[in-house]
Image (cartoon, rainbow, N blue to C red; front, side):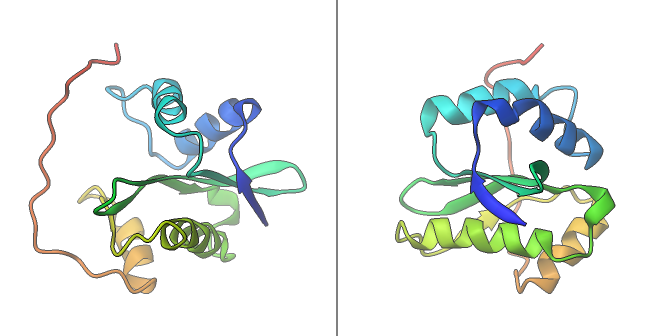
Length: 139
């Protein structure tokens, strides 16, 4: 798998990937999330491809205090082949290159597979409660 920067032409493939992975929700328009990411920073959005087909994607950000990973997804047809580890390693490298001391991410409490994946990568579950507040509706 080749990891590279997201290109505008990847949007359809990335949204389809996220949908196959169960990452999208009715209250979050993934196309608006892509536009928002690119408007803030056009780097830190990575895709993994095999023979020109997008099989993995991740949004990475760093605010000067913590790094964040969002929307990490790997095509279910190629799960278990190391592509999740590879794209996460690329995300971590992106953060380290910017001096990021710690990476945070959130996993839905119902997503046991994702929790097992991050556990296997050496992530530690922080004793925190995650809060959210919708500021702009995507409907």
